[in-house]
Length: 500
Image 1: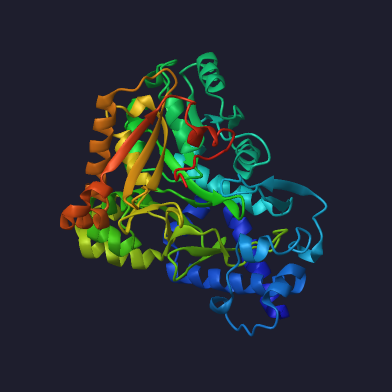
Image 2: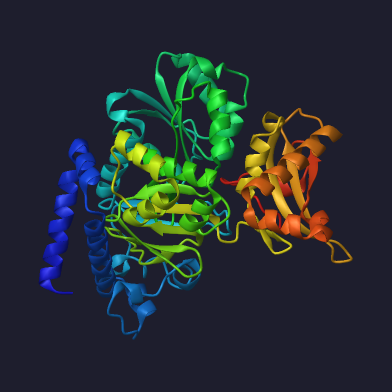
């Protein structure tokens, strides 16, 4: 790596730090930026990080070996299996040793054994600045006095740990953890005259707002969520519970493996998602999947994101202060990135007038989009059709029994005669009893939603009458805390939606 390249990288970094120190300047810069220039900066920085990691990270040098690589596009992807589990924690750090100061975070273990992630104190500087911009931009927090209640799980997990550490620099925060009684008690004690932001995973937020222990409509509450997917119907359901059409419900995309706040929902990304949800052809061309994914925008000067041929994407951290660099790291989340200009062209083909109207009324960030449709393996297959938990969740959340349901799981069941059937296991809220009508209504709602939102499912269902029986959802209700499938999830941070 040459001296000139190092000098350019340092100059770019200094400029970014100065810019991010001023919210107004950052906003103006990103509203007028050249998407093509941002992409060039992203590619340049990714190549720099790759070269530096070869020099400073023992594990990465071993991983690359004697491969002849001349561009970032040729760099092989890494993931937990081929890199993290193969090399020791120290080997994966710069200099082959842990940083002197920093913290150790932990993944949730939702896909198996929890993993430790080593972070240096110096890498937090840029993260704090970026998080501040996102917080100010999506919530207009620079002109509010939020009281933030952090409902993330407490412990070594990155989300809860970093969230409180960051947000306390910009507003007042209480780490309530995922304790519904604590949150409700706090709201009652502090009163409805303040503006609140409650953060937590989607299932927790829904359970919280399903509580009748407080009159939610008396309070001004916005929500922040992440960690797993949600639907537009889910957002509308929570807004109704809050009694505020204008309530901001924002998702953020990140992972303990990589970083928190990689992508964040913006007015533009929500607009794009809404258009795609109403137009299946636009949805298919933009995202290449039949479900409606969450759409974020991300800063390409902080994260270099590259699509793969497998329908997922890799992420490279572009901060050279990162203790344990991640180069083209694959989380195996289904989705990908779309450049700002490319997305505009596609949308204009289908919804030109709506796009022009939105852009005329709103200043937008000229940042690329990242869409995420759940885990690559987060589906079940029925008759060759992928069934997404998010679509089933959408049906449940819009059903008459939404407030009576605690959680659900999907399964592809095969009987002794190898007949396949589609099972939906539903756990009821505490104190709710089962009835036949509930089962019938839920089965009807799920079927109608899948026929409406899952184009592959719809086509197969209408054209293969003999197989309709296996495609129809069969709902199995269980009382609270009685089904082994759900009890095995107790203590885990995130819900698991597939019963294997």
